[in-house]
Image (cartoon, rainbow over all chains, first blue to last red):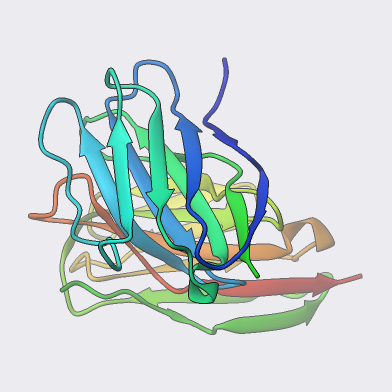
Length: 114
Length: 112
């Protein structure tokens, strides 16, 4: 079966431009997460979607960051007016809600802001 | 806020050596997961431990969950170059639902 996919795999953009990152979760997974990872570091939680519930946006670093999930499936993370400090790998994960919440990650989108 | 501290942050060893990575917190977790991440890829789940004192083995990898469910360890026996990667622990809080808390990771390099 297909895993989590993300696009684009790499994105280079100029400071001040807006970018959109896409995530296709595993079919049937009701939970979707976005993380940010700097080189060789751990994962910084950004936002979490679960079914039809209001998303947990508590990890978004500023109001330039937003995300939506359409139809309970595909999600888009949007960064407006990008800054150099936004450069990182953005990872998406999905999971089933059950006894434990094991997450399945996509390969990530490497964002470079010049 | 729940925090997970991993140690060591970096580890470089020779093929055939044994090693242990630690994941510690002052908070109790309902479960704890270990992931391995290779360059250019997302983390891949290795194991989930749920019960205090639980030990799980995955070939040469042994995972242990502390009795109080506040800490965990990963032990690798006879490390191989293919074990190289970033090892991440992640805890599910008792009240945080499906939002995991990730440690900062241990970057392991196994030299041939």
